[in-house]
Image (cartoon, rainbow, N blue to C red):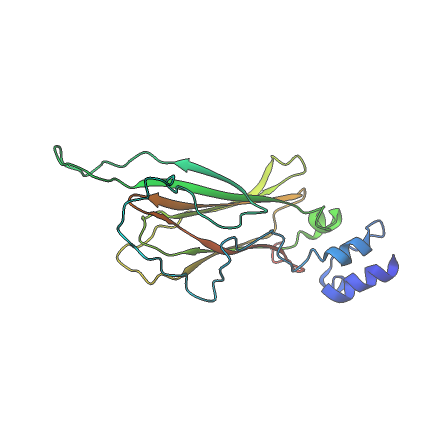
Length: 235
């Protein structure tokens, strides 16, 4: 076991950074799972895209949906590893003068993807989480669009061992400038530090806006990550 502890120490330089290295830790498992400096989220790019290249331009056909096919209300992709859900939003009729005939109104929905990371199951140990409290870096990329002023939300919570008590949380709900359009990826990031003892889970949730009118359009995400660093910046 001492050999495995030395391998872990050599890989992440733990002793030099003041990280506790107790003898009661299964260092072989830690070394094999490599929980530090690794993305702990499963399937971080469910649409098969990368933020290194712009999102694909989607053709607007202007054609009504095929009456022989059910209308599409949810994005397509490989969502394995994610828990997904949809929330249909009420139709927005504000700003429409009385008596105006409306053929189509956009149906907006939130499409939610979430994961819960069990830090102990990933190979991290109590003394590291409670005493050293390593930085936890969160990153996500969402597709810029003119779909709506609000097309993306990120909610990340650090949870205690009961899976419910929130130790710290981060929320991001950007507003899009509909006058500027470059159709690229926008980055969202945050680093948790100095969060105190008791952390055992990270709950990662992002919501993207979708629209169905004559055709379906959904906001895409990529490059989602939760990384436990081998460093700390908090007290």
